[in-house]
Length: 139
Length: 322
Image 1 (spheres, chains in turn brown, purple):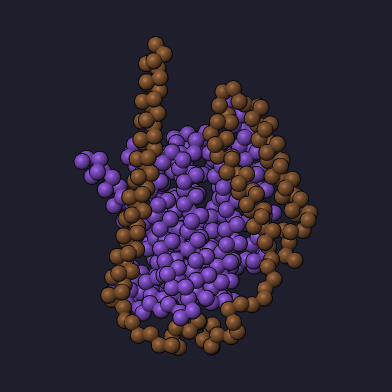
Image 2 (cartoon, rainbow over the protein chains, first blue to last red):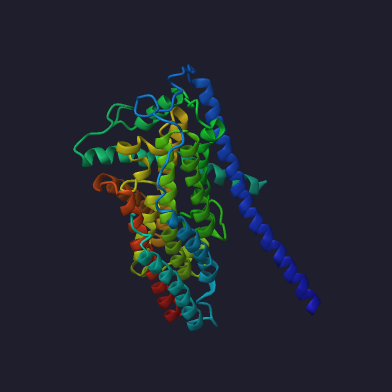
């Protein structure tokens, strides 16, 4: 009967999501344990250590001499193109994971493989383009 | 009730592993490095071959004054060590060590994904430290850390994706269940890419440009003292445990072994992890530091293309044998 199927499917859905949240609730618990550990360590450290601040001690450390210059300075930003490259490539490669779990399943086979090569081709051409443009070298 | 006890026990085990294994690796590093360099290493603390050296270090760190520079962004500066350390604790939960049902902290369906995502958070700690210290050297170190993450996260992701393709699942226990011995030669390129990229993300030598002591003192950690500094160090060694554990699970078959995989699978996991950790130490003693541009070049012109080639190979083989 159609109705039963619906009920079963709904039940299954609930169970799956319950398990899903259960495994992540354990992750959450462990995160709480970790935060507690850090808090206890910092708290205990506060009780154990001496506190004798002096102005010299609180100076920024620059190899033992007094800090030179302001906090702001000119600098040449190198490699920022890498950051763009990374964003583009990483977002692309995220899509690989869901695809990776099904691409060899029955009914996919050669078609998905061709699709994968198109995908890889895009990535490779992108990389080659960046290389040719010279952004992968120290300027 | 039983469930609660079970979960508590698991969390406890993961936590104890998180606190002890990094120390074991640290102590091994002290001794192995020393002997490779014709020294003895620590010999006094604890009596027998200086086994308690890191305990003594910990006691010393706890007693040291906690200095926050006057110019620093106080809150962020103080929080940074926790942000660097805790992601590795969470990753440990997902690493399976044996074939049995319960031989993993918690089965997480999106395992590979979860693990890579959480590991990426650790780098934020170094960035926070670098920016909040209000120190030029720290800032340079933090930015180098960021540049390194940008370069090496990608080959790591791609290599992990190759294993997920081979297994047809992204769950870590699922990958191990699907593992066959011939995956070793099949995925070897991916394994090397993953391991090298992981080393770079941990800023271990030869990829320790962000903490290069001869140029920028100690990078993002320059201004840290006492307990907070110790937590950064702990994060580095916890990172080695996690990286070696993950490489073992993803590429070396985890609990699979020539024999004894049923009862003693966890021994195989630990053994493989220990051998990889030894290699990490060995590399530190062997290779000089890579320069910043060499470091970027290695990733973009070698590791990324290699990882893409591995994915192509995995795809072809997988479709052919299905």
